[in-house]
Length: 112
Ligand code: FES
Image 1: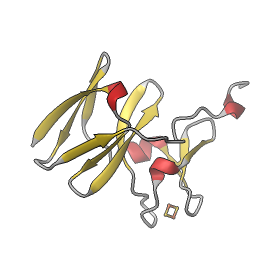
Image 2: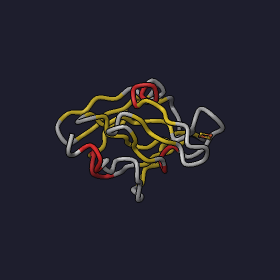
Image 3: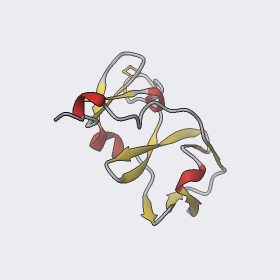
């Protein structure tokens, strides 16, 4: 087991061994969520928020997943200030930043 600590603004995507993850904002809480859709492995990191950001819609077949259910597959993590520490198996970790649509605010919710 390995604990990695990184500045939150230094990445939004990572690979742990062969599995990909992305940083998903659940309110103020960052979650390191699996990118693989539970349906057929689509790229959840490229999904869009729906229903006032409570769900993430997979771009392949438009299934919507509650954020709390996606969070169940997330890496154990804790945020302290501007840093996040997460636990992985003793595997290689690669991090990077890319354009992701998932953390964009749903404008339909702003008037609610
Ligand atoms: S692969 Fe995500 S909904 Fe089918």
